Amino acid sequence: MKINKDKFKEFLDKSSCGLMQNTKITFGESGASSNLMNKSAVALLETSIRKEAFTEYEAIGDIFIADLPKFIKIVESFDDLFEIKTESNVIKIFDGKRCVDFPLASVEACDNIFEKEFKEPEGLIEMDIEKTFLDKALADLLMLGESELKFVLEGGVLKTLIGKDNVKTENKVTVNVEGSVTVRSGEIIAGVIKKVGEKIKMKIASDVPIVIYDKSENVTLKAIVAPRIEEE
Image (cartoon, rainbow, N blue to C red; front, side, top):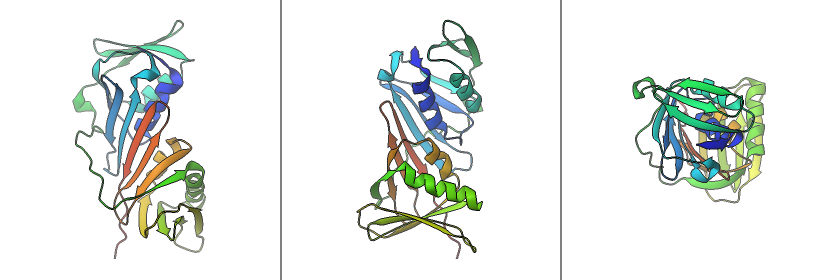
């Protein structure tokens, strides 16, 4: 197989979002995909890259990688177009100047794999969101050293609220959808927001998982992030 570094790295970055340590990548008839859940069972990432993104493609089935962060760094270290080939217990990444042999793992070594089908909760409200709006919320989260982000939808306006003590921030954007929603998320949602494109779809309802859908020219990401339920 052959693919441009940036295209394959986009797929790997979105399949990980900095939350996953290992992966199963399935090279199927229509492209490659992964379905992963982080160890704390807070985030589920369903990611795919279409076969047309590859200059040359082969449906080789499943491969297992035990150290996904390191594998991403190796892919990033190549210049542009490279080849991928599996031999025995290694995956080879190479171009005309460089070759890296990376060990393949067993399914037992990959505990981020999620095999079940996730069904979206009923009553989710869908809206189109620009990443710049979410980036402001992440900047506030970091600035205040907080670990919780609250989304409030009311009157066609979506707000992000951060802070519980003296310093609090509020960002808002008009979304022109009906409904009243309050849902909280932990800081783990930051990993997802950092990797999505400029425009996404977000689905929310009160106290149920937040669904973020991102689609670029070649890569599709569906992220499901569990809510934080406020203690009585």
